[in-house]
Every structure is written in structure tokens, then in C-alpha cells.
Amino acid sequence: MEQFDSIDHAILDELQRDASRSIQEIAQAVGLSQNPCWRRIKRLEAAGVIERRVAILDPEKLGKPITVFVSIRTNQHNEAWLTRFASGVMQIPEVVELYRMSGEIDYLMKVLVADIAEYDRIYKKLIEVAQLNDVSSSFAMERIKYTTAVPLLS
Image (cartoon, rainbow, N blue to C red; front, top):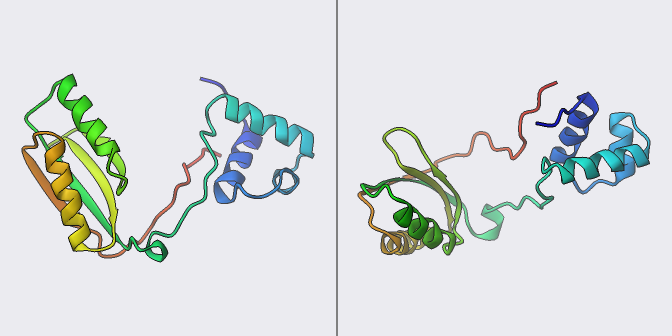
């Protein structure tokens, strides 16, 4: 694993807050000149630490105000089933996150929808994808904390 120093962490922190800022602004914030800052960012990208730079959108303002967490249990624990399931879920754009879990729940997904009727359509697509033992849905009542920032060691 590559070593990252406090300046790398500061750059990453700045980028996580607002990646649309210029190299000059980021360099000033971390106490570097532009060229060394740019080289460090390029190195962090090449190392895969910075996967990509994106815009964070507001789902509510885009007509997707409801967040649903879907817990899935299956009695199929083989590669063929997982491939079919993952491939099918990838075709459902409303599913924005999917995790294979330890414990009683096999898979957990986050779904963004406009309303209950839209979620019902997603649910019907989901149960067509692969054989599922149990599907349990929980609707978020309020988002109390949300961040895309990865906590960095100081």
C-alpha cells in the first residue's frame, strides 16, 4: 500500500469538499504551489485513491425523494446465482447501492424512488431477477447525516 502524507490527506479532504475548484484554489488551501499540487493529484488518481470526480445531485429536487433500504435473504449461495442477481440489479437504475453482507441479511441495497408505486415496480423487477428467500423494505423517514467523504487520518 502506498504511503500518503498529511499534504496528500489535506488535498483529498479539499477535493472531497469541492472537486470543482481550480488547482490554484486547492493548492492555496493546502499550502502548496500549483505544480506540486497538480502532480500530487495526478499521483493520487494514478494510484486509484481518487476514483473519479462527480457532481452530487439532490434526489428530492430531481423527483426521487424516497430512500428505501432493501434487505435480501437468499438460500442460493453460488457464483451462478450471484452473477445473475448482480447483473439483474445493475439493470435497475433506481438501485444506487448494493452490498453483500455478513450476518442474517445476505444483501442490502439502497433504492431511490418517487413514490410507493414506483418502488412497487422496482420490487417486481427485483423478484424477477433471481430467486429470493426474503425481501424486506424499510423506508427512510429522515436523512440525518449524509456524506460521500471518506474519513481521513490526520
